[in-house]
Image (cartoon, rainbow, N blue to C red; front, top):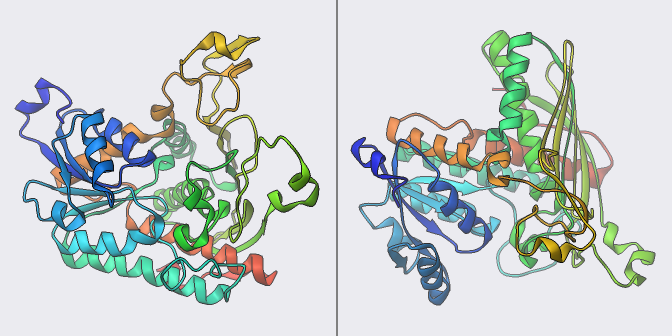
Length: 410
């Protein structure tokens, strides 16, 4: 769909087909429509359930309900295939779309190891050899990068933290101060997940440390890489990780509690995890992620540098603080994602998508396609995050620091 009449005169047009029609697909449509200077046409959507695709098309005013990925990829008008599907489908669908000559957007994380196929719950870090899982996840990411290289098309990693205004501002401040990043502390935590499949390793390839921790991990990798590029012309890369994971919702006293405000249901995935990352130059990062907090989402990254301390908070923010003794007084007005009540003092986000970086993310992706340049958040970053998080799983299960493979330093 066009972002406005003025865009139609630019001759810069991108047509998108989305695969999947749940939570991520909805905010992708909304933020493609915020792209400026380019005529972005979200033409259609495909889903494994035809009726769901047709309902999504009607709700969002699209043109086409595609039969499947192959149908969308065969449409000569489509430039970008946007994958909003479970993690275990990322690699096969991305490779299929790239081989069909389409640019590809992949929701985070880039890929995952979800067992050897089927719906076997006896897979994952609590049941299988962690180093084997690491190797298979890294190999999956490698196959995606190879498909992008042979197709000549972009593999775009939908990591919104990289584009969040707070992270980009932090990067500019660090650049101006010519400072060394000594330590970073990042967290993404929720009161639970939007979908039950994300609680099962056989669909998502990990728990909180992977599916939530991938966000602050990517931001930390990005900022440290930018520091290295500014100073020496090459990124500073991670070399080792030590981690711990837990299933906090399995604590016996919590199991007995009623009512429960924190969501439950994690059987073969962790609901909390923390990584301690060491970089080539000796700098460190502490990354924490959880599905076990109340009060809405907590997304932040603090940078402790030699000449500055910078705290970047995406959610919550304090730009709009509102109080009411009864949450019903605010009616249907949106407060912020996953907060349990509208009563009391609330941090009410005026534009949560903007704070989370989604408009800038899709602006960069669409500009990259029409201008023939790589995106800021690309498949290489996605691969690095997969390697780091799965290295964290090895450490968590062995109790030892895990040294990342030497090729990470190329």
